[in-house]
Image (cartoon, rainbow, N blue to C red):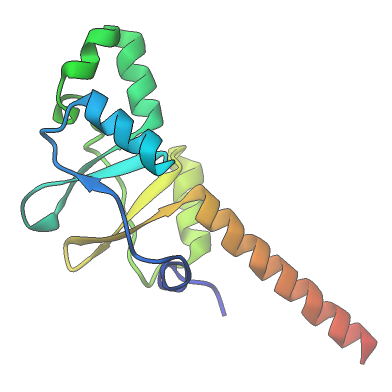
Length: 144
């Protein structure tokens, strides 16, 4: 049976770092560093996903506008055309989405609200567990 986003979040937790779009890039960079994460979800009214801000967004902003951009709000540079996934989607579906879109973080949405986040690391870990389980099953089958 394929692993779902819900399975991954049940194992790792549903906690996600979300910030208000009025935070400055400096403040968000400090959060990314402090939490040792690569992305934050930007939420608006009623915990609705308004965008995502990643390390890549930070680097692009500084490269394009210089260090002065750090005093700007995250609203001005966040990625607003984001793809999200649902709890019932499979890890393989999310992996395909990440590969096609060339991104490493996917917010999870439930009933229109932020429910969690899946990273490429979560996807790889889940896939490795599946492969290890398949290998063990093959060994058991061969041995029997």
